[in-house]
Image (tube, one colour):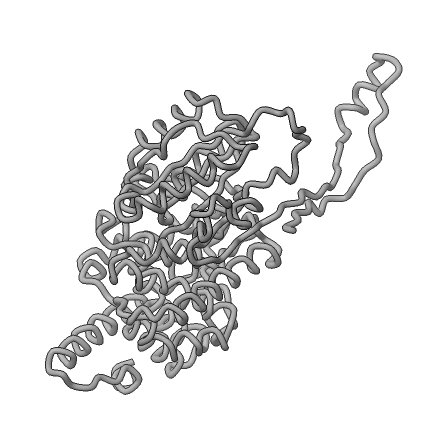
Length: 442
């Protein structure tokens, strides 16, 4: 259970004045009602491989029964079935038509639910967060189908689709139940288990958004098998990130398994995704700041430059690959400013490269002033003074409130040279050692 607490001091209830004399009126005008209260939440995430296993016998899986259980309603047997609306990334729908059919059949087999129509298709990727017409279309369909706060909106897709559909679900009727089926490695290990949703506006990523705990999240590994290799590995940058923040053992495990992950060995990949999801979930539920009311956003380590790089590229650089580059920049910055060991920075960069992820992009050179401008957007997104998470050690984050632009520029230059040296070594079928390279130039 996720609990929020307003730590204000409780005051006694006000007594209404018995007359309208000026003294009482003046007293009332200077009074204050100040009550603390808690808001309980449940955050449920299931992991499986084929959530419809056994459905050919006409049975609905226990996961789906639990996920769509009406656990906090006063519904009775004669209550009308809850309406269900499905939104799915069009590429996922094309790649997994049987999975989509099974989902619709499973919902139709549950007597307390009523599917309002066939699954609605939605363009995936950042486009669905940029195009305001898409958000309006989702809201119009919610209205046209007469969904209410007891209804369910099911979102199947990567982080962008979950964001766009989740934003609409959160603002319609001040919140309709959202069930997520993340379909990418990144969303299964990170964004799909989070409590945020947003769309882009004013040329800025995630400018419009809310915090809203999903009704349920089902991480079905079967959805990942249709992903192209590049998309599959890109999501593991977030797994690297959260392990650097939260778990020395977790980072070591990913580093040692990087080649196996790149080769898509399922047992290894599933374990890392589940570890990443659990670390993110523990931060949300036990970290003391699930809705980011404080000044720091530690889960956004490596993100200040990543978000801006995405925008500068016109979102041709996807989030996972941008985060990989952002991590490389920030671990080198941490070496210069917060005592992070160069050997550990080399291990991080080596891990990213073995995963098949980038640590540099040419846009960093040609748009460096715009990238650095992302720091102010990062500050505005949270408010107050600039607070950026860096590393003192693996598993030991530290916040800084100023960023030295010259050190960032140095890190970008070093990563550009490292990229070129590593590429040359690969083309020559030679050996490239990140640790030796960094020791010589950094």
